[in-house]
Image 1 (tube, rainbow, N blue to C red):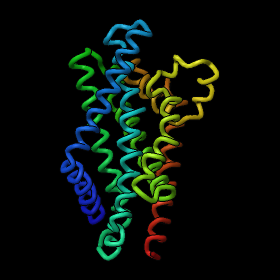
Image 2 (tube, one colour):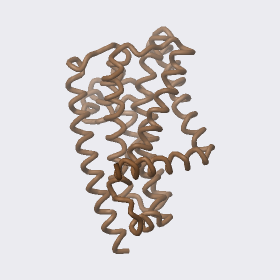
Image 3 (cartoon, rainbow, N blue to C red):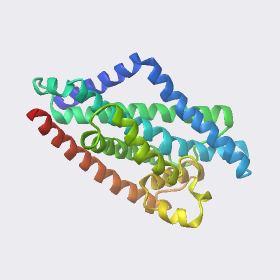
Image 4 (cartoon, rainbow, N blue to C red):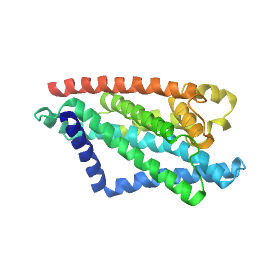
Length: 258
């Protein structure tokens, strides 16, 4: 119960700060909606699809490939860097809060943000463009949670090892993120790529996130039909969570010596 209460307290603090910064909250809502609209209308025009078919494809790609990337990975990096700059971590050392609860609290907070973006994207897609989620909701939610965990774990790795100041966040996201997003099919579906790029994309975890969730959402695929992408995502998520935890523990040791 102690860990659960502390985890909720950390997540609540992060979410309350986000609500107070209403400008950031508005921007995090505008971004996925704008990408959704661009993806949907471009697909409808270029792929000669009906509006509902286009948004059936655009919604999962926008959510997993773009929205969760910036909110969960970028948000985690920004949170860790700001906590270090504001000396929040040093104050935690003299409090009864455990490092495990802090780690889980950040994960829970960004999971809430990701789930909120999922609700926003699918609400707009279904209400205005007649798109629908055609597969297993449980499987779809599990893929979303795996993607969130992978992004948050990677955010801990980047935020603790490579980012030292707030200015570093944008540089990290631009250097690592944007090429991976494009190659992962977040803005242009991977099935429209040249064959050579499709082969390279198979080494990109975002490609597997997008493809797995797209097939479940748009095509109603079961886990046996997305096995390659699903298990790649599971393995990548475990690797990122473990790597994020080890990087976080190393950061705590460094901060204690400073």
